[in-house]
Image (cartoon, rainbow, N blue to C red; front, top):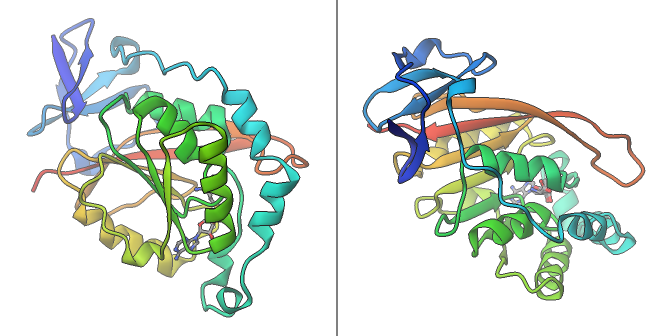
Length: 251
Ligand SMILES: C[S@@+](CC[C@H](N)C(=O)[O-])C[C@H]1O[C@@H](n2cnc3c(N)ncnc32)[C@H](O)[C@@H]1O
């Protein structure tokens, strides 16, 4: 039997163990995972779900070290004074999601060629470059010009199709993307509230992957959650970070 957990993504199931599930009562930290056929939601034991193995990325470790370089740190710290004067300047604190942890997140949503990807608050761009290795095209936006310059140079250096734009998350349109990433760890309550509202723009079945905070609202279903360790900086010790996977509900 085949079911999908997002548009056009088929998962083979070993058994018929599908239990219709009340999404309002779903807790993702269980031994089962929620999948949908677009109309109903089902709980399936994780042991019975066979998502495709994550795509192997040949230069993953090289990418990771490049984003731990002195130049990346310089770009991240070069926040323009006018941006530091913003009310939400705390949201501008930079850090890079670990490449291996992020690859695991992409694997869990069975991301593949043809999916469109957006990182809102992309920083120096490591998740976007990783996504472009798996999907082809991937896009990142950030309000800090120095990180966008770094990200564009990195894309060219690593022959990636990743693209970047300088923009405020609040202005970004999301409706054309299949997978949106939100490394929300340092985002203010207010920024997270406006992102939550914007996620309603996604088409039914699109995926929002977030880090540290989940988004709880009527238009999203939390379908999965997992922890994976990584270090934000070269000098910091790896620690577990929690990812949340949401799906845009059908109306
Ligand atoms: C913790 S970093 C994450 C970088 C990248 N997503 C990653 O996971 O590796 C958060 C980024 O969000 C950006 N950011 C914060 N508020 C923003 C806003 N309102 N518009 C655009 N970018 C924003 C910051 O400049 C920073 O680069």
